[in-house]
Length: 157
Ligand SMILES: [Zn+2]
Image (cartoon, rainbow, N blue to C red; front, side):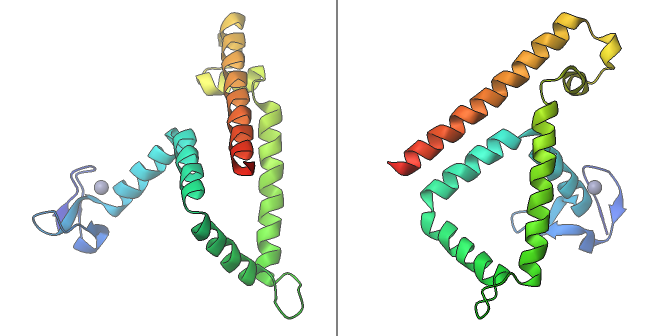
């Protein structure tokens, strides 16, 4: 048994990850706390993580190719050339993700979305604040678009 230094709950050793550099060989935070903290980090650093992934992909084209090949061999039946069950399922997920993303982009920078980001009801926020936030969201969107096209053009040269 060990007490998690994050949530202060006494838990079984199996509820902790192993950590060689720790005196008892067990991580100070329990698995639940580690997972929660990682999730929060991912949610708050989406742009940073995406930029890192893009960079990694650029530096490791052969690994990306290997991943693609492996995915393809899993998704497409080599003898018939048709989608496997896995491939069909992945395609369905992809289509629905795309739809969600499109919906999000459409709503982005709209007053409701801006209010949601600010974290207050729309009726309680002055109009100029809403329009400032909308402009900021649009700026981010534009920056994302420019970054993507820069990535594309550097790929082609
Ligand atoms: Zn904990």
